[in-house]
Length: 115
Image 1 (tube, one colour):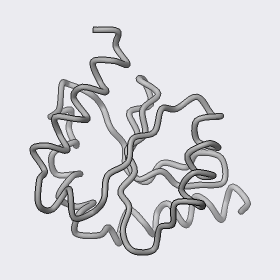
Image 2 (tube, helix red, strand yellow; image 1 turned 30 degrees about the vertical axis):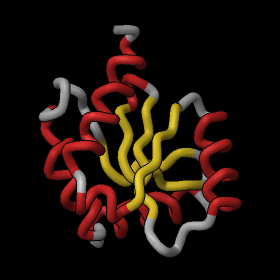
Image 3 (spheres, rainbow, N blue to C red; image 1 turned 90 degrees about the vertical axis):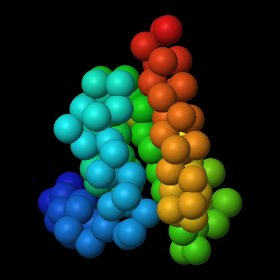
């Protein structure tokens, strides 16, 4: 996917977030979690990562029914080749256990900061 096309796709995804993405974004935005700046729908290589803390090299991906382990593994590998650590959650985990998801993200933030 060309850069212009990828940027357009990212913009479209920002407008049309899933319910799980909206819920998690409401807790990540504006440095609410550990004073960490996250961005949503961030282009990385040929992919658009759901959320990224660029300064920490951390990507958070949410997976729904359209994801498969094989495609996700390839996607994760490529994102990691761009210098990011990827953590994944199922959409239903965000919806049913947002506090647990946030605790995991906080642990990853601390690891990325060397704390």
